[in-house]
View 1 (cartoon, helix red, strand yellow):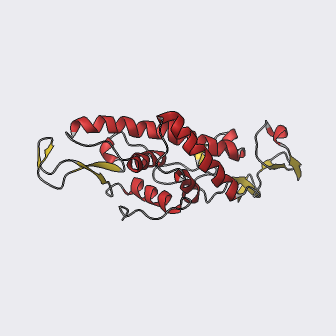
View 2 (tube, helix red, strand yellow):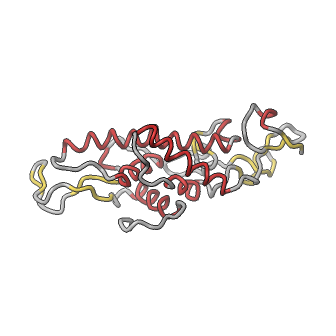
View 3 (tube, one colour):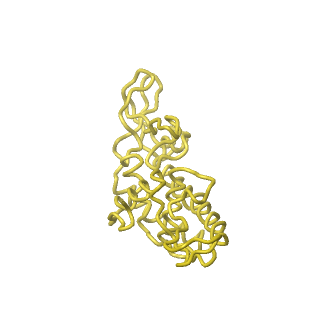
Length: 227
């Protein structure tokens, strides 16, 4: 098995090896500290560039790899009859087919995300900031007029809703991580005690992921609102 440089494999910036049969294998030499450092730098910068404010939780996305991939871009498995460090794909679940997502951040399965760990991390950050948080903001703007007096989401709640959308996608905003709630009496669209945001523990898919990310991010701990 021969080593290959980035230019040998389409310019993809990831350590790989070429087998005599022509298969491209990955490397297990990627440092977790490098992944964490890249996430801790990119997320606050891209959040600020998108929303014009500081990221509420700068280290937030460092909690995604422990849950999604165990920080593994590659993992030893058998493929095409060969046991080697192949790109780490997701397993099948009731919601997702096996191999739909790949790598450290479990993003779309395509070549650059499979063999380029830096591209995988970068695309994961972009996916969260540019798509999932945008969805969370759009859904918040849909909900607030329906529940008079409901304040804007706090920064961490906004992030949590984005995390939920990173893990899955519901068209109904009442399925997201934080939803309107009322501790008083509901009459029409009014709440006697005033509408508040409540953590939607009924949607375990979202909330378990949110709690896992916040618990495992650098410097993180389990939030008090998590079950």
